[in-house]
Length: 211
Image (cartoon, rainbow, N blue to C red; front, side, top):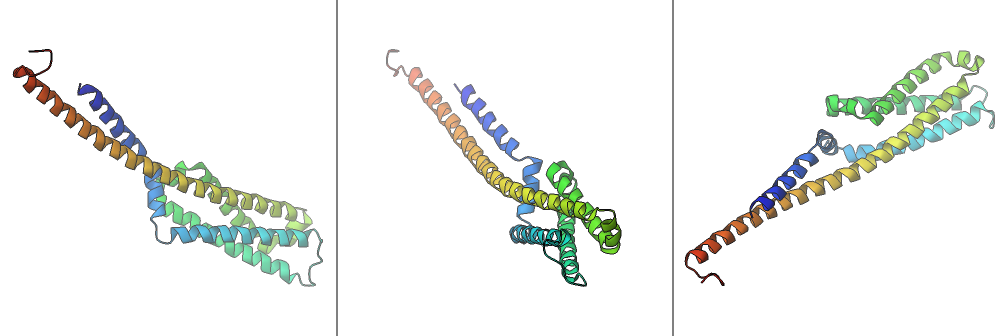
């Protein structure tokens, strides 16, 4: 009789162990990092701001709105974009510092890091070689690359929110698995006690039908 509860007990233990995956531990570490929740809000705001900057630069590049004589507006937008990219670069290094090797197991994070680094390098190069890129007709192409980076940033933000919800569900799963384990252990102990009492009753011939 005790074998069935024991099997259920092992199942609950296995569920608990499965819930404590390296990914969950890493996510836990990230969620508990100081100011990490504020960081996510800041990143989303920066992504929106960068999208507006890219849109403004595209409008100026396509001459939908005529830029000023010295093109100061475009330069200001470009410097602001580089500043935002620098913040994203710091964010990437912060993730690597917190996650360590676990960072390289997340494909979306690797893609985001590559896009951010390439965008930062291109914006720095563009800062000094803008006229050459414009002469080659590559300026708008670079702007479109930044649009791709913004889309990637939005995807990462949505994915981060989904991962947070998944983390909560996994935490609930761990708690429920631990509760099941406790209840199964209690059930096993009670069944053993019932079996012992049945044995005593049999020994004294007090069970119905065994008189």
